[in-house]
Image 1 (tube, rainbow, N blue to C red):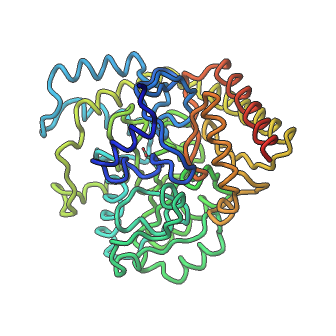
Image 2: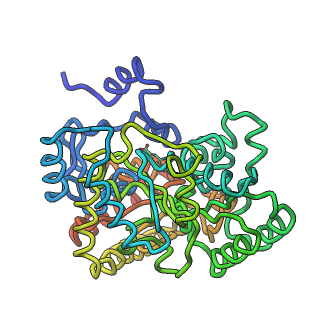
Length: 431
Ligand code: HOZ
């Protein structure tokens, strides 16, 4: 007899906490048993029963070239043949660092880690270490991984499950993090004027992707740069999602702002576990061994991750001028979806920044966590299941981003529109 999704999930739950290695994967907010994946290729992902889906999650962003890209796989295989971890310097790490800093001029020195969480955690420690201050400012709905200092009103899984702050983070530490509304220049100005001399860092997703996609309002990031410079506060751009997603570089390249530190991950690892923190030389050289701010990792700069990342970035470099095509594809998808929703009488607000998008089930506008939370999550869940049934793989949460890769074709977009049309017809009938 064929195994069902419930069978796989029950078995997993017996040995893995919650059955998953990252909470949103459990589908708690949309209901039902998660699909177990067998493999993926290009723009498609396949479940264990062989069913094909058009993938708009792309492993939550990294797979910008599509799954199992030939060059990336070749690089991983070749690298693996030479050994998979050495815990010693390698030449590929230098190549990776040079490639990244050539694309992001604000990165004079960098340090590789194994995840975005570690990169953000290190950035915070560096900022505290160099300024001698303790307070951290972040923004409601922005997610910077799960380190203790950054879990206050974080988006992503915490927003999905309605967890404001995580138990296990000492109150004394949580009190050192101020979380402000995203896109609110007045509040920002007030807080920085009041506490500026005690603030070590402001960390921000320049385009928020973890409360669903929320673009920065005109002037918000510019003001942030100005205020932080004035008060000697370290400005950290968390570009784990946005790095190399819109251009060969970060969102900072597009808006001409130089943060003091940048966190990267996802795309720069080509689907392997990776993160990086980089920025001003005078800050970065404070890390041990040149400085006394400690950070380390057995698998940091892992040769497989470096090889996959370099292959991905090299392919992206050749596609430098093709990023607008990615935008066009995403624009077409979002415009067609918008029209379909309107024709079927559903109020939605679609936020799109280049090749990232979120369909919020509400009229909108959505410009911060409060407005994002006005969405109809039940309707989102029904839409999610409808699309899945019709062969489209979306993130199982209203508060996540959708992504398009270079492997997505016009045919994929057309099929997605058809799937949406069928889904909405069914939803209307059931309404
Ligand atoms: N909430 C994470 C993305 N923003 C999920 C990562 C995962 O489950 O793989």
